[in-house]
Amino acid sequence: MEKEIIINSTNEDTRIALLENGKLVELFVERPDNERSVGDIYKGRVRKVVKGMQAAFIDIGFPQDGFLHFSDMGSNVNQLFVDVEDEEADNGDVKSRKDEKPWERLRNGQEIAVQIVKEPISNKGPRVSTELTLPGRFLVLVPNQRRIGISKKISSSKERRRLRAIVKKLLPQNYGLIVRTVAAGKDENAIKADLQKLINQWQKIQEEIKVARPPMLLFQDLGMAYSVIRDLFTPDVKRVVVDSRKLYREITRYLKEVSPDLVSRVEYFKGRKPIFDVFEIEKDIQQSLEKKVWMDNGGYLIFEHTEALTVVDVNSGRYFGKRNHEKNSLKINLDAVREIARQLRLRDVGGLIVVDFIDMEDSANKKRVLNELLKEFGRDRAVTKIEGMSRFGLVEMTRQRIRPSLIYNITEPCKCCGGSGLVPTKGTILANIERAIRRYICSRLDRRIILQVHPEMQEYLDNKRFGRRFRLMWKYWIKITLEVNEELLPHEFRLIAKRNREDVTDKFVSAP
Image (cartoon, rainbow, N blue to C red; front, side, top):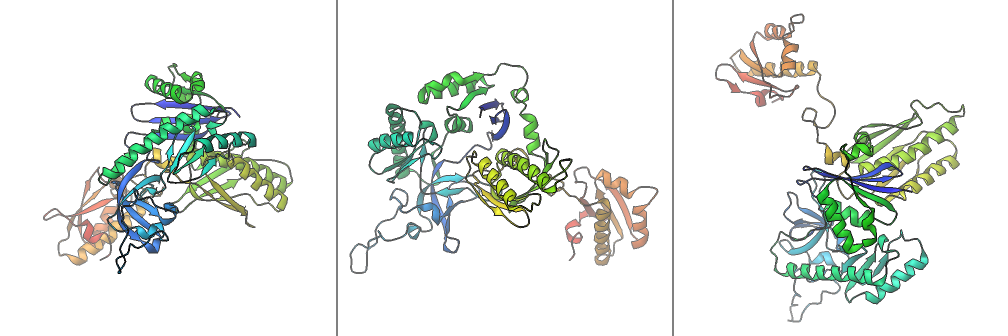
């Protein structure tokens, strides 16, 4: 499989696209007002411990408190992380805390060092952990642990044994190490240099933990572009193409330090045409924002995003296959699996996902579709768990959520519909106006009112053929003066008492 990384940088944002065989499969977007925060380490303060939720809320300076689940506290908490002293028992002896669970040490107002593991999403704050890690090019340093992990993507058992032997020899006391995929084939000196850099970095953080006053940022991980180069620029990536001279120089400088052999694969794009147009990426980005996605075989997929889950519906559309319905369904479902896997990676959809496949009777065909799902998601960096197919043709799955989905990064809810995609009809708006007027005349003696509406609604009310405003005036024996207010949304209106121009909308629009 041929992989490429294409980077487009402007004054407003940096977009990084990962292509597999020329097709867009992942997109990362970073803006100055929305920088990547996963991996950042903060010294915070415990705002509230909620044992019923098995969690604590940590003030790290964000608009919403960080969410620390007890399961994210590991098996022990270093004294640097939680500032607590051993308590004295009634007889004066020091009470042992060795058998105490880590979360039992948490107290409101306590200082604690945490690391962001999931970015804030919607109205939820970031998810944090006390198990701090520092990622490098070849290794991930895990302080206060004693374990060695090797990336599962290194398939060669011989190479895994070689790397484990190197790391075991270099492993310092009170540290754990995880060997990354890009470490495959690297010699001991390269791994040792990366380890020393991480240890020096951790020692600086330790000093900061002791003196910093919460909430305080202690360590900021690399920006989006650098983290993608660090994590994704592996030997199987054919090239990295970037259209910014500044970013090109910074990336090559970084690679000269960590992987000089990859510098030659970084290219500066000199064309006049936008780089994402040249590589035909823009059309794939646009497609990722749409609900309906057409497949090459004539079938199509429908994506519905809700706060609780994402639903994917598979439809045959314009597909005309053989007369055998079972074979047609299998063909569409298998093609759908590949496109679903690509779209979920591209949209960066996380959480619960339900896929409604076209019904199949043969259990062997259902198993084949499931196996294809597992195979396609095997290339995904996010952890995915897939359940079996139900008798209704539904497949439930979960995909690791680290940051908000792409659609929330590059779009925002419509001001008119609030993100629902639906607004009241003009007839519904008129009915709401009539109800408000009726409440108004029941509560006041004055029968003169000013009605402010959007220009579109003004045309609807004053249409000479239907005379909707005059019918209201005759029905309720009230004088309605119509005013156009272009600041209102099409479905909004305001009621103004004419004698003193008092805005009485809030009093009469909803039932008392």
